[in-house]
Image (cartoon, rainbow, N blue to C red; front, side):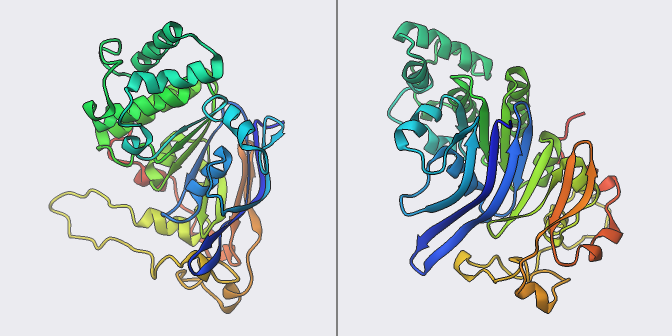
Amino acid sequence: MPLLEVSNLRMRLQTHRGPADAVRGVSFALERGETLGLIGESGCGKSLTAMALMGLLPESAEVSGSIRFDGQELVGTSEAQMCRLRGHRIGMVFQEPMTALNPVHTIGRQVAEPLRLHLGLDKATARQRAIALLDRVGIPQAAQRFDAYPHQFSGGQRQRITIAMALACGPDLLIADEPTTALDVTIQQQILDLISDLVAERNMALILISHDLGVISQNVDRMLVMYGGSVVESGPTASVFAAMAHPYTRGLLAARPQLAPRTAQPVRLSTIAGTVPELVDLPAGCAFAGRCAFTTQACHHTRPEATLVAQDADGDHRVRCLRPEAMLPAANPAHVVESALPVHSRS
């Protein structure tokens, strides 16, 4: 039985323009020790999917489908039950550490709190464990800085503190939502290396959320590409990068800035035509219809099913597209993976 099994997850939000289907039929499974990436533009539903796993949705959200964590159904479970899971068996690193940390409490108190709440440790033992965690995630002079406040740390150090909080109780599942967005590239790689090492060390399952294909290509075994609340392409990371089968996935890759010699001719950055539709304005068919160069009349009215592209020992590569044959003949060569990697790639 998988550690996490999400089946046909749907979420409807109430907006000033009426109900909006923010997540539409997302399904995936995750074993202990596995790593999964969720990628897509802002508003595609990836962070809402993570919030559904944590039970941190707005009160007006209507959720259906199934989220089973270690055999326990989370959809419809009580807030008391979710409180026993959050911070204990499911940890989350939030996107912006300055809003994730409470500015009026010391960082030591915030790291020690889940240890006392979930594990029942006394104050002295929790302090000792919290200092060890802060030291493990690379906070210098952790014991001396235990009683410091969030504003006294740099952005990279604050992100390390939120990682220590998420890992305090040794969760089975770690969700990292854009954990490097506000950091410079050097610190980004340090944070990603730290998460990778801790996941391997503790045999945790990891869900890494990002808008950066380079980050995903280096740090997860499998990936889901989301657009308009749906998964439009999924599969083993290497397989997806080797043969991107959805025009949106290719559009994301083409839109990545590339470094070039100063002597090279300037090249206009590729863009995806049109704009992301509002959730209340999604077409009945493919959500990407109209922005895609391969759009046909059927794309506006028929929602594509997930089609098998390739199958190997690492899993199935699937795509939601009515015209997958239009993409597959130009399967990406191996250099596409290299071109997707960030400048600070590992040696």
